[in-house]
Length: 116
Length: 114
Image (cartoon, rainbow over all chains, first blue to last red; front, top):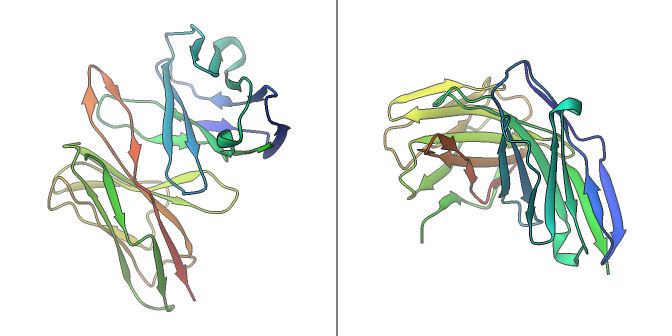
């Protein structure tokens, strides 16, 4: 069975500070995929990133960066120079895809509030 | 514009009534999914469908039913057998491309049953 843990329920930071959202996952599969989604107050989930288990390269996209470490089963997400628009609930998710039979397992989410 | 449409945004029903939530996509995606979200919790999979006229139970299918008569439509019926139907329901779709499959989500329907 798969499991995703987001231990931080809520985080508040002052605008322009950096913030890291933690994600720890569990799976026995050697091939798996990790995701981050953003859920703004409107409710819709916005896809941010997908990473497969064979690619441990860290990724940077603008102010966003992701640190994938298989040794600690973690896939952490950092927002640099946070902005008020970053306020949302962020979900980490795990999928063990059988190329057609994919199910996402979500963490419980981290509510991020950026204080102006 | 391509996307996933869920209607209505807010839905209110009396206890004991069945209610059907709509989900339509014009992305030509083959797979579609229904998730339930409760406050402070992650999303939990209710049902998913990989092809027309076929669907599979997710982790919390009891009290729900679905149909997939058309590729672009995947309605979810919340039956009176669902003990705690009040929740936020999200529909998603995906397609396999270059060995990758990413789920894209609709705006959600917030169902309140009293």
